[in-house]
Length: 370
Image 1 (tube, rainbow, N blue to C red):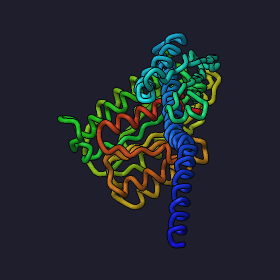
Image 2: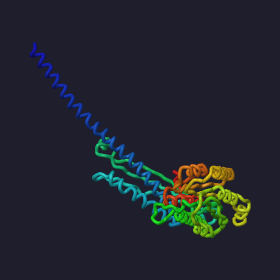
Image 3: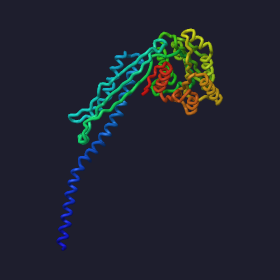
Image 4: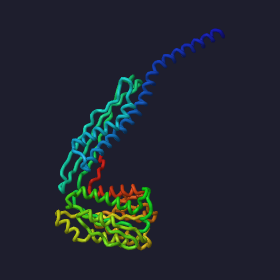
């Protein structure tokens, strides 16, 4: 009886072992396919993100060339295609497998341009559409698919000149601390400021080559405000004023701010623009400092001007150049919005901040919209 029972148990174990082998053979392709799907899902997500980033960059590259009038529409289209192909070269290599390569279809680039209605400016929209064929792993192909297509689309807008006339007043710190060194060898803060202003004015001049739509001025300050340069159609007048600045004294921005705001909002300034182009100007006030005002009242009076500016649709940009916390706080609260406040911790950042202000004011800024 014992022998018979032992034989039965052995037979049962053998039967189960055979069943497990059969089941494993049946399940294995499914498991392999599932593993392949997991790998491919990760690859596809990465490919989609990479393609979208490359498409965004291609649209911005073409739009930047158009905005700065460096290339024609046809050249901009070629630029977008070349930029996209260059950015996708490495992903194509990474996702290609033996006998089956990842491929990027020829991108569809469309550029729509139109006159702004003012000066020589043009408004444009750059659209880039792209398709990337991602090969699937051999394990996933067991489920019947060999590749999958991912798509991306991007659009960038910009224009080459201002839509309306503008007046800009620069309020610039020339206190003694502006003689301090920066990260650039042999270049102090005041020298960096002069370079930054030169770059900003160059952008405005490019947007208004005939001197009909842009008027600028500057006023420097330390413990008191200097006489301003006076609003002029010629950016060279403002630049000459700034280049002559010498540092010294303590800091009080309030008087210079009052001078600048009064000049910008004087009805005669609007009348000058209307007489020239029939347009009411946009107003921009740019306040820059590298320190703290010496008295609380100076801060209060400066902030009061900024508050008035908001009520009169005068855009206030502020630039804190290697400034302490108190100076940054004042300028942050003075700016029309967070986007109008710049913290520049070295000379390069200061130049970049003024360049950004110039682009914004002249409507040269390129922005990604989709």
